[in-house]
Length: 190
Image (cartoon, rainbow, N blue to C red; front, side, top):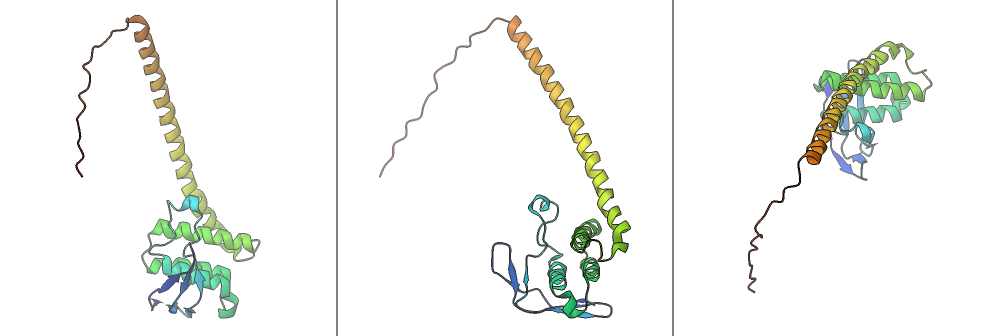
């Protein structure tokens, strides 16, 4: 089971690629072949999140398969919910790390549910909420810690600036004599 061929593509645009050879995936009961000529952008990750999930990686084959199943699902007997599930399973088979795999699955599931107005497998909603909310709590908590630390640092800077201003007011200016800098002479020979 899993991918039985390699991913061979050619670039056709800044972010767009075309399959040169078929990409075959064997599931538990079905086999899918992404036909040569199919187009992909690998993982459709918005730019703001590419620091967390780049467009390509260990999950490139599942992303190409998912693009194909989303575009041609009815032709090959695969609905959006199944395409999203196959995407997650294919990533697991390629050892994509657990958290990244579930975050990516959550992103494509939300897209599928919103696209179909929650008709494409609403039974996934509890899992989807867990995948979406739990990491969000950690991100918000981390943001609060960073905000508090930045505020403390800002207050320390204000205190130091006030002390420096007081010292400048109390201590008369001292002139420091310096020697003029010696400039090297450079000759260019041609």
